[in-house]
Image 1 (tube, rainbow, N blue to C red):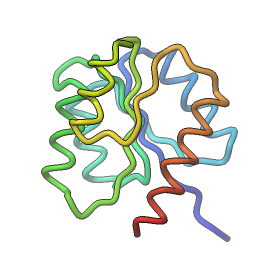
Image 2: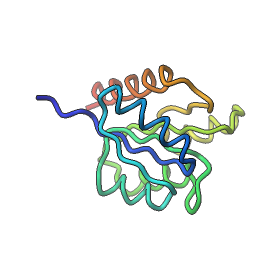
Image 3: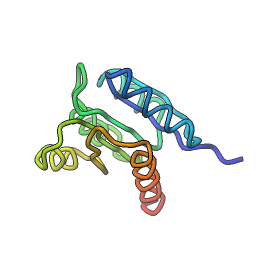
Image 4: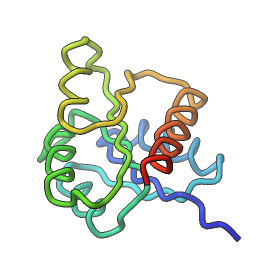
Length: 129
């Protein structure tokens, strides 16, 4: 039996977190959640998920800060990071990618878009391994 990929969802919005987690679980992923940047950083380092779905605007450390710190603290962890936000300017998206994100999704998005993006970053991760 193949172990399903583990996805960490970090979002301070309970509604967004539940929506994302439900779509991922329905698709067969193992999901863990965190409600702020500090908790997300700790869980990412301890749980070592395959993929991180990270809101940009978070209490404590921002999503940009979490992304930057994870890339610096654990460079050997081949973690796929998808940043999500209602901040939808091209500058926001470029900044997210420069912080180390693999993708940047603008809210709102459908569960189909979310699942396709997760699959794409995980597939790309396997080809980098």
